[in-house]
Amino acid sequence: MAIRVIAGSAKGRQLKVVPGNSTRPIMDRVKESLFNIIGMDIVDSTFLDLFAGTGSVSIEALSRGAKQAILVENNRNAINTIKSNLDITHLGQKATIRNADVRAFIKRPAPSTPFDYIYVAPPQYKGLWLETLNIIDSNPDWIPEGTTVIVQIDPKEYDQSVFNNLESYDERRYGGTLLIFFARKINDAEEVTQNE
Image (cartoon, rainbow, N blue to C red):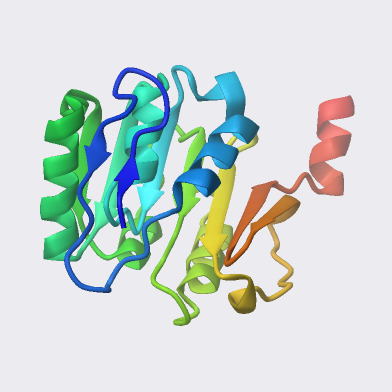
């Protein structure tokens, strides 16, 4: 399957895919829809790509003007593919690859400067998306107000779960891909504090 950069400084560049079937690259039409939803908010944003795979989503974000992306991946073939794709697009200076297990990575203390976007696109049918969200939810310094968490899964994987600190505010389905958008839940105590 061919994947490409759709818009921005690296528009039209063909990206490599990870050998084998360990990753599931996002379809171009889904990626285009995703960034149409984000719109100009991507400019100067920071992007955390969990289960980064080919790096296609982070590369699209950087091509469209994001200032920094951190790509977390522990599959050696995927990491090599990400490096190649960053070379192809000349976007490596804005990207940092972390060879780490995603779950261990987000159990760490959150960085002092929060990410604007956290993208979660794990291997299918292993419950990893929900496990990842539960870890983020229990470590809420990762998701201050203003951070958007976007999950990419197969619709068959979806489970209507309730979180303490995250709430979904939008869902978009494109064939066999579901995108779910989450934001920090503002509880009653926070609302009272803000209104005082």
